[in-house]
Length: 260
Image 1 (cartoon, rainbow, N blue to C red):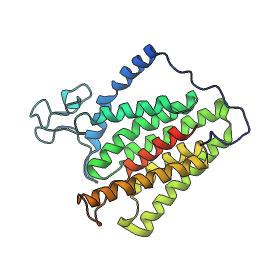
Image 2: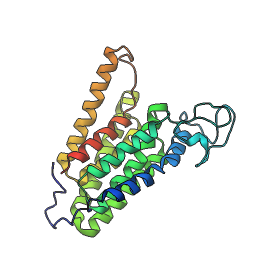
Image 3: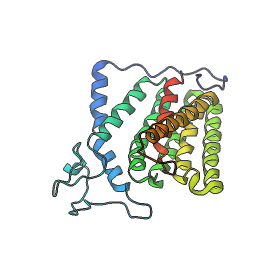
């Protein structure tokens, strides 16, 4: 896979590889993000049309960053009921996101765009798995931040061509997903998937059309393999609906690692 294919301007130096001590500090700092990420999942993992959750469903204990309910155990301190994402799931997702961020070939500004998107992708994946929806309050900031930070990358050395390609890819992919909703109804992608696809298209389109294509192939392949496995295990039926957001995030992360 190639780097941004504009060919107009030389690439700026890559972000220097951090020393082991620096990596440890950054990892600890990143893991400190787990409470707000857990809060995002707990608040938005509600049925469509419902107000964001503000407290424990059983006893009403308020959810707040720093509270025990948003720790790795994901248990309400008042009644011990399960709250939000499953225990350890946010932490595992964050470690995977950090691995992608470390391994991806990117400049500092590009890495910032990827980090921003991954930070929003974690609660989006867990919310989609829980209630089969991708809230606008999460997809909107994810997409806006990616476009802004890629614009910064363009302004600081990569040139305007990759950014225009990113915008075109994001808009095109989002419209393509939305078209399936309008044409196929429930058999197509949801509008939440379409909004998530805008950021995905922009991020992968920045690196070139082959990277975008690879991301889509990996997305649909992982979805197909998972669906087939669940069918064979009789966990789902042909009429079952699987959330597509997690596969879109998985395919995007894998494609970013191939974009070297």
